[in-house]
Image 1: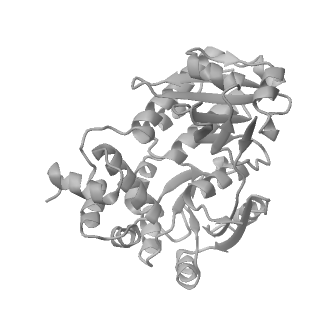
Image 2: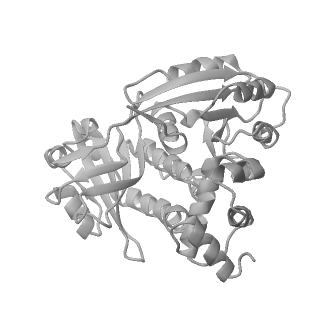
Image 3: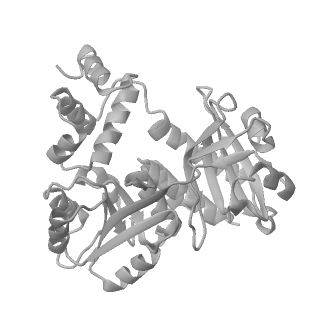
Length: 229
Length: 136
C-alpha cells in the first residue's frame, strides 16, 4: 500500500468547509479499504450519552448511509471507553466490534480501528473506522494514524475551533455589518449573492471568534471590539 | 446498548449539465431510499436553470463547472444568485483540483465536488449537510 499522494496533502491545505473534510476522509476510506470512517466528539461523553459526529464518511458502492450524526452510547461501551482514555490507535477484533457497534448494520463481519485524538486544548475526539476482517491485516496503522492526525489538525483549526482572535475575513465583516443593520440571513444572502447556508456559516464563525452565542451578542461584541462602528 | 437517529429527507434537486449522459448517472444516484426522496430536475443551460428557480422552489443546485458556450462557474453561479436564489449551490467538475476552485465561496457557491467523488453516500451526505428537509 503506497503513501497517499501529494494531491491529498494539497487538498488538506485547501480544505475550507465540512464537505472538504468529508472528501478527505473519503479518500482515506478508499486508500485504506475502510468502509466507514467517523470523527466523533467525545467531550461530553459519557456524562451525556449522546455522541455527536463531526463527520461520517461511508465508502460503499450503493452507500445508503444510516444517519450516524448523533449516537446514543452507554458508558459501558468498550471501544468508546478506550478511545476516551487512550492516546494510541488500536485495532479491535470482530467480536469486540460487533458488541460495541450493535447499533450499526454496516458493522457485520467488520473489525474496528480507533485513532484517539486529544487536541492541545484538551478536547477529546476519536476517528473510528470499520473494515472488513480481510482488510484489517493490510492496514498500516501508523501511516493511517499519521494521515488522520494531519486531517484533524486542519479540521480543528478551520472548522471545529477557528482562531479565537477577533479578526474577521472581508466576507465575515460584510455579514457582520448587515446583521448590525438588522438584516436576516435570507436578506443578507440576497444582498451578497450567497446562499443562506453560507451566510449562516459566516455568522457561526464570527460568533465563535467573538465567543458569543447569538446575533445580538455578536453585534454588541463587534461594536465593543471596534470591528464595526 | 446504543442507537442511532433515523429521519427521512425529501428535497427538490436541480442538476445543470450540458451532457445528457450525466443526467442518467445523476438519475441513478438519486433513486429513492427510505431515508432520502429526491425530486430531480435536469437542465442543460444556465438560462433554463434560471427559469426553473424562478418558477419552482428548488432546495439545492448541482452545477457543472463548464457548460457549453459558457464560462466556468465563476460566471454561471452568480447568474443563478442574480435570480434571488439563496439555497445551496455545489460546483461539480471532473477536475476539482484547479486553483480557481479554491475561491468557490467568493462566487456564491457553497461547495465543490469531483464527479468521480459523487456516489450515493456522498450525495446523501451533501443533502444532509446543505439541504436538510425532514419529513415524517
